Image (cartoon, rainbow, N blue to C red; front, side, top):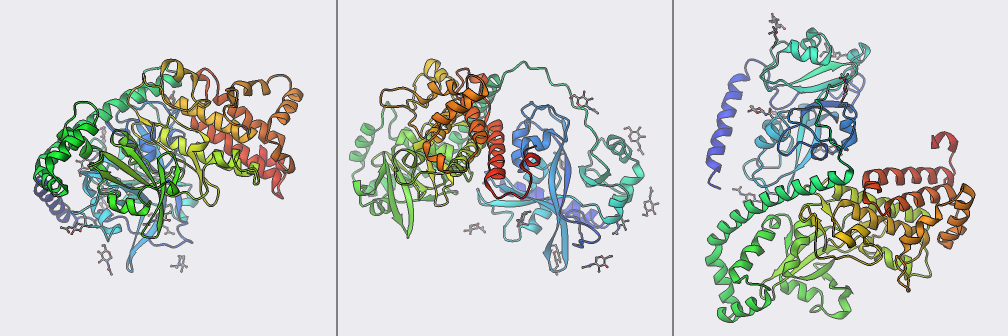
Amino acid sequence: MRAKPNHVFYVLLIFLCYSHRSEAQLPSTQGYTCTANQTTTPQPCQTYVFYRAMAPDFLDLASIADLFSVSRLMISKPSNISSPSAPLVPNQPLFVPITCSCNSVNSSMSISYANLSYTIKPADTFYEVSTTHFQNLTTYQSVGVVNPTLVATNLTIGVNVVFPIFCKCPNSTQLQNGVNHLVSYVVQPSDNLSTVASRFGIQTQSIIDVNGNNTRTWDTIFVPVTQLPELTQPTVVPSSSTPEDDDRKGVVTGLAIGLGITGFLLILVFGFWVYREGSLKKRIIMAGDEEKQRSKMNKEVKGNKGLMGMEVSLMADVSDCLDKYRVFGIDELQEATDGFSDSCLIQGSVYKGRIDKEVYAIKKMNWNACEELKILQKVNHGNLVKLEGFCIDSLQANCYLVYEYVDNGSLYSWLHENENEKLSWKTRLRIAIDVANGLQYIHEHTRPRVVHKDIKSSNILLDTNMRARIANFGLAKSGCNAITMHIVGTQGYIAPEYLADGVVSTKMDVFSFGVVLLELISGELAIDEDGNALWASAGKVLEGNDEDKARKLKNWVDKAFFGESCSMETLMNVMTVAVSCVHRDPSKRPNMVDIVYALCKSEDLFHDISDDALSDPAVMGR
Ligand SMILES: *[C@@H]1O[C@H](CO)[C@@H](O)[C@H](O)[C@H]1NC(C)=O
Ligand SMILES: *[C@@H]1O[C@H](CO)[C@@H](O)[C@H](O)[C@H]1NC(C)=O
Ligand SMILES: *[C@@H]1O[C@H](CO)[C@@H](O)[C@H](O)[C@H]1NC(C)=O
Ligand SMILES: *[C@@H]1O[C@H](CO)[C@@H](O)[C@H](O)[C@H]1NC(C)=O
Ligand SMILES: *[C@@H]1O[C@H](CO)[C@@H](O)[C@H](O)[C@H]1NC(C)=O
Ligand SMILES: *[C@@H]1O[C@H](CO)[C@@H](O)[C@H](O)[C@H]1NC(C)=O
Ligand SMILES: *[C@@H]1O[C@H](CO)[C@@H](O)[C@H](O)[C@H]1NC(C)=O
Ligand SMILES: *[C@@H]1O[C@H](CO)[C@@H](O)[C@H](O)[C@H]1NC(C)=O
Ligand SMILES: *[C@@H]1O[C@H](CO)[C@@H](O)[C@H](O)[C@H]1NC(C)=O
């Protein structure tokens, strides 16, 4: 809070500088004006920004891809980087694709930009994010113009802000002259136009034709090119790392980052706690006899943490979520679930409850289990169950998580408890892809990475449209402990290396996902009454020649498919994916990116055959 006046002063100072300069050239500070005329300038267009990898947060393609809402592959390809998981070095040049269009901001002004949504985190300002994360590819003034409803000095953490990344689409004359892209490039202090031109392999004059001749440092200029120049990438220390090492590295950095953040949070929170101590005390006294509560809580909390320790950790855990989630009162939850009565129980410690006409799933957990809250606040994806709010009952040392209610129950009950209505193969394939997408997200797009650790059909929920969401992050780990002593999970789904050595990596989720795939294909339980694991016998199906395989697979798949027009080829493809997922050696298992790709291909194949396709499947199948 105390830093604010300084900051305002700084922004004011910069504003003064800008307004002084604005006489020289019409300000590009609010954005580059455009006219939305499809005949002269076809829009929107695909173009690129020139981005420099940057320590500490943007030294890997995953985080840059997240920032720009693209996939890693979409950056690695145009940037001449062989592998999407390659580490980057500071200042490494990259081409990041964006979609550019002309957007009107009011009746008299349109500006050309790629709209990128960014979620405000603590200490973010328009200025800070524009100049650091987005490397001056936009300006705080322009952010203000395209987000008229937001007050720059009073940003709420968790709010989504559109950052308009400056860009231009080539007009018809330029297209005729072979200019296919106008690449957005921020002029650096060490640049002059001729060095920029030679970097892109074009004439200096071409840049001047588009941008005029008085460009300044930190301006975004548009470099006209026929095709992107091939970037010469610095040779990164050749690492003989297997994907496993890679995961470990992620875990270790994750740990470091996690510790950093936690430390910072703790300091912050401790300060906050000291400040709030008075009012907290008051509340506790109000709640009853202070001394009684104190001894009661001490009894509830395991170990030697006292009341204060618990309050501090309590606040540390939730301080980040206070703005993002609804905080429910314990009374509200009591009322919604009829005092947590059995009639509202869904399963385990999850209750169904109605609050203000909305139905929620309410999970009761003891205080130490709030890891899930910490993980869920970091993730947000359509294939993960959404957290809506939480409640802390400090008297009972309980914590409640309140989720969206997913209507159609678990995949487990659809596969194994519902005899009357069998899921079609098409639906199952769709579910598999949904789950794979959710896992890809937590493995690739969270920092530090999250490993779910308990993927199984009963933790996969289906909504009204039978689309799948992953639930129950109760065992999930973010980065921490590469090795755990305390083995948790579910028989039949646990990866062998985790059982044997406690190795936690994303590959253990891949294994469990493979078991879910096998369940989907066979309709069988992951572990039968005699304790035989489904995965142990799956490999045999793919042994022998093609004829043998087809015969064995036919025996193995769910008989419910026989009435459907589903091809042996897609079944075989998905079976192959499943078997590779449950490989004993984690390094031989594919990662979720490959799995999503393979499953989507199978789905395409399936559609070509099952739909009344006009096209020739042989052509479509490529
Ligand atoms: C777009 O440009 C063409 C050619 O200059 C012009 O004839 C047409 O009127 C313009 N359309 C609009 C909507 O401004
Ligand atoms: C349109 O927005 C720009 C930038 O905010 C402003 O300078 C201009 O006055 C606005 N025009 C109208 C008519 O509101
Ligand atoms: C951003 O772009 C998307 C798709 O291009 C569009 O649907 C959305 O309305 C845009 N948002 C704003 C604020 O311009
Ligand atoms: C962006 O511009 C500001 C000056 O306006 C400069 O201090 C900062 O270093 C620039 N950011 C990057 C990443 O180049
Ligand atoms: C800041 O925003 C919040 C809600 O978005 C509002 O309640 C509060 O009054 C605002 N504060 C100021 C100083 O504008
Ligand atoms: C641009 O910079 C290069 C090297 O930094 C220098 O040799 C060249 O003369 C400069 N050109 C202009 C027009 O300033
Ligand atoms: C296309 O852009 C160039 C450079 O900005 C300009 O000289 C030319 O007149 C434009 N052509 C059309 C058809 O707008
Ligand atoms: C820059 O352009 C203006 C007109 O566009 C011209 O008068 C001036 O001489 C140019 N300056 C240089 C250094 O080329
Ligand atoms: C592309 O990258 C490779 C190595 O990463 C390099 O050897 C090659 O020269 C690059 N291509 C160009 C045209 O710079």
